[in-house]
Length: 115
Ligand SMILES: C[C@H](O)[C@H](O)[C@H]1CNC2=NC(N)=NC(=O)C2=N1
Image 1 (tube, rainbow, N blue to C red):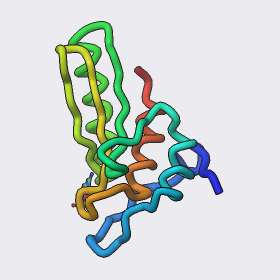
Image 2 (image 1 turned 180 degrees about the vertical axis):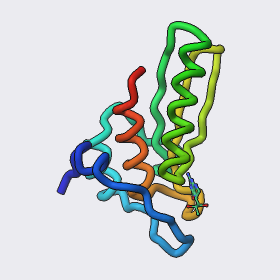
Image 3 (image 1 turned 180 degrees about the horizontal axis):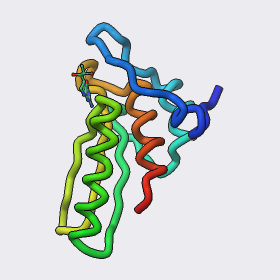
Image 4 (image 1 turned 45 degrees about the vertical axis):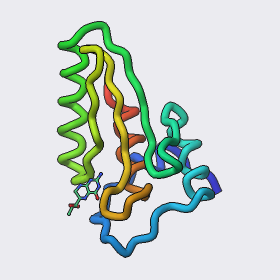
């Protein structure tokens, strides 16, 4: 059963232990429909969204908003700034070496941030 963005944004991340199983392909597919801007990468171990901003300051301001959200959720994406105004955000659950609900919750919340 597919999951909606509203369901994801209504949730909070929960602490993820190493014994939590990573999402299967089916669960990933169900969750990806809620965050269609995100691509699956690294053999299903992470999801990525790319942004192009008009300038460096705008890109950095957006990264700062993502950082605040990550701290609130206690789940932290890898943040990349390339070409001084292009941002790539990667989400995976390091504790389990794959994807968990936390990644999709944070992705859905990032999608709601003003750009
Ligand atoms: C206790 C706390 O929830 C963990 O250390 C968190 C911190 N942020 C994290 N972020 C990510 N992306 N993966 C993790 O496994 C992770 N673990």
